[in-house]
Amino acid sequence: MATAVYPGSFDPVTLGHEDIIKRSSRIMDKVIVGVLRNQSKSPLFSVEERVGMLTQVVEGLPNVEVRAFDGLLVDFVRQCRADVIIRGLRAITDFEYELQLSQTNRVIAPDVDTIFLTTNLKYSYLSSSIVKEIAMYHGDISAFLRPEIAQKIREKYFLCPRDMALPFNKNISQTPDSFPDDGFIYVRIAEY
Image (cartoon, rainbow, N blue to C red; front, side, top):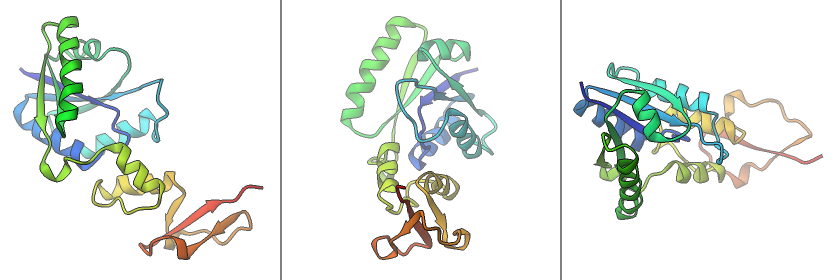
């Protein structure tokens, strides 16, 4: 039985990640999506939130499960009794970095192989960082994520649907002319 680990921070999980997960599930007997708990980064979502979002994404894929991990990837791969690491490649710059990582992993764990999957062209530019930056500046992120995940990001950046907006508060400043008319009220918390 061939088992693969698809690791990443998934902060947040994008349609590009989802594409790699689905394609991996068709070529492997079992896929474990490994959500990295990275102490050196400040993620938008906690590891528990990211695991929860990914669990929703893989619902309906019976050979895929989601687990959090920290430490060396090859140790996690061995713990999962996997023999393959799946990595997605968007561009040649990804390849240089990923090749270096896979060769290092091969030295540490000669029994673990890495399979590179090129992304679907419609997601070749997409990254979690880009999505977060667009959201931070109140841009439309609906083309990059599932609707429920896009909503979670909006909530993180103090955005809410117009029909859920709270009554005006003197500590909140609203500038409706400066934000897109996309069904959301954008609020900025004013300093005291």
